[in-house]
Length: 109
Image (cartoon, rainbow, N blue to C red; front, side, top):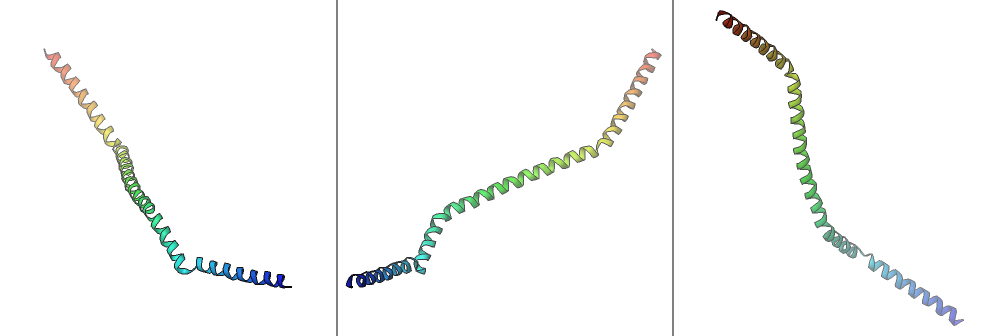
């Protein structure tokens, strides 16, 4: 009978030992240490990602400004087509008047 009793006592001892190791491994100070180590390892990479994202944001903002400026310029050109047609008509009139004046001066000679 002593053997089952010894096995029971041995199991109790190993269970208590396992529980103690588990509690010790998961103690809050150990958890905080693990958290600190994780942050120490991860922080430089996260900082680099943040810097990259800020740089990409600045480049994107510059590209957006350029595109908006180009769209505005195209819109202004479209709106200016009325004026270009008016200038074209005036130039045609000027050329016609010049041709009449040239023909008149050649007719007097």
